[in-house]
Amino acid sequence: MLGLTGKIVVEVDSGKYKNVELPLEEAERLLAIVTKKLGFESGDVNEAYRIMRNFDAFYETQKKKFKDYLVPSKSMNDMILGKVIVDKVKLVKEGNKRIVVISFDRRVPLDVIVEALNEMGYEVEVKEYSIA
Image 1 (tube, rainbow, N blue to C red):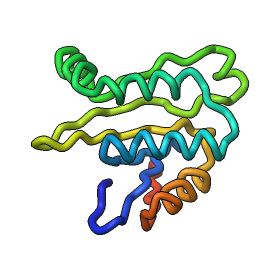
Image 2: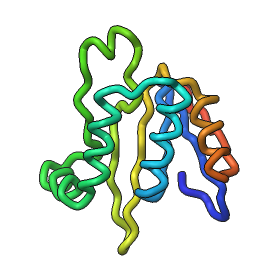
Image 3: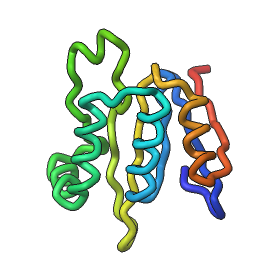
């Protein structure tokens, strides 16, 4: 997912969830831009920020529990209103690099994510996967 020289891939899985892999600082920035563009910030976004800001502690928890992803808690009200932004978060360490994979909810428009990444200076490639 992470590309070279400012190129980034947004993977859209068969469930229409959008996955973006970025360095930790850039992941926080992306979330801030996306929430601003959507005009709201839900509890799951605040929980995702908390996970990212406490990367090392949550990374250890993720490894101890043999989990690939951490799932931020979501309010039932947000789910009903379609205001969930972050479905799940994956924390990855590669040497001393801290990388975050954000899986955006299916109801977050792809164009909002692409616009946010373009605003951050990335060239975006979208890969859509479907069940054949």
